[in-house]
View (cartoon, rainbow, N blue to C red):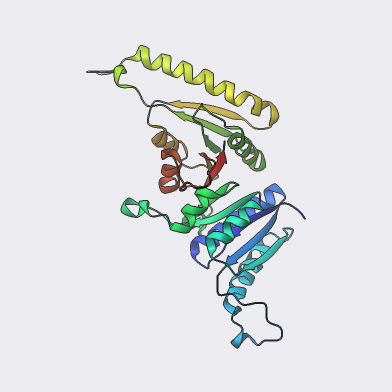
Length: 289
C-alpha cells in the first residue's frame, strides 16, 4: 500500500481545515490520504440496515462528506475512509505509528485559552511516533486568496540530534518548491548586559559562534536537497520568541521535541509550546532523539 498521511476528523471547523491542508500535503508528497474518525460507540458494520436505525450513520456521513469535498478538489488523490471503534487518543496514536504524519485541527488560542490546547491533541503531539501537524481553521477559511506564502521555517537548538527534524523540514520545503529558513534563538546572558544596553563584543562573538554551528548543521542537508534555497537566521532573543516571530507569514513552522519515553508524561519544550499556542501558520512537531 502507498504510504499514508492520516487526518483526524470530528466534524469541527478545525478538523475540516486540517483535512483540506492534509489533502494538499498528501498530493504534494505523493501519499494516500486517510480520513480517520474514532468513537468508542461505533457499532460493528451492519448489513442492510436503513439509515434511520444505523448507529454509525452520522459518523459515515461526516467522513463521506469530507471525502467528497476533498476528491473534488484533488481528483487524482487516493482518499480512504477509516471508522474506528476506539477513543480518539488511542486511535490517533495507533494511526500515527502507521503514517508518514498525522494532521489535527487546532483552535485559535489566545490569552488564557492558550494554555488549553485540548487533552487529546496534546497527548498525540507529545506521544506520537511520527510528526504531528496542527492546523488552525482560520488558515483555511474560504474567501479571497491569501498572499503567497514564501517559506518553510525550522527551529534549531544546535545541540543534540536534529536529523529527523531537518529531514522533515527540507523535504517539506522541497515538496512546496519554497525556500527554507533555519532559525536559532539565543538569549543574551546577564554578563553581556550593561547599563546602556548590551556588550556588543559579547553579542558579536555569540552570533559568530552560532552562525558557524548552524551552517555546519545545515550543510549535509543542503547537499542532500540541492533544490532547496536555505537561509539562516541567528536572533538574540529567547528561542521561543525568535521562532514565533520568524514564522510570521510562513507556509509551515517545523519544531522538534524529544521522543517520548515510556512511563513518562508527554512533555513539550518551551519552543514547541510557543509555536503551538501562538504560531499563526500550520505547525509540525517532529519527534527526534
